[in-house]
Image (cartoon, helix red, strand yellow):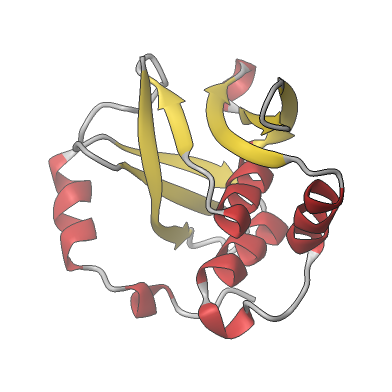
Length: 150
């Protein structure tokens, strides 16, 4: 069973080298965090900020390629691999056929945000245990609290 997720925000750890993407279940209480790199964090941040919408980046390039070949991203599924590394499958479709492409989780999320594709995790995804403290924290946080990621 898949759970549809949305981006709830990002956390920059104290060492300023570890970024964590927070995903929240669209119609539920599941919250997961996925470690991503700085480049992925910047792309996700830019794709969520309307001020940057007109600036092309790598993920816009991907969108242009998909459009040129009349393809779209139907969904993204975040998966767990060995050593707590998260990867993803990006599902591309031409309306008749669907193809899976492996991706890093952060890149897949950035791509999904650019084209407004749904993001999912599986029920057995590690870390889906609901945490009260995180929910309380997320209910108080505003997008501006995350600041500008550079």
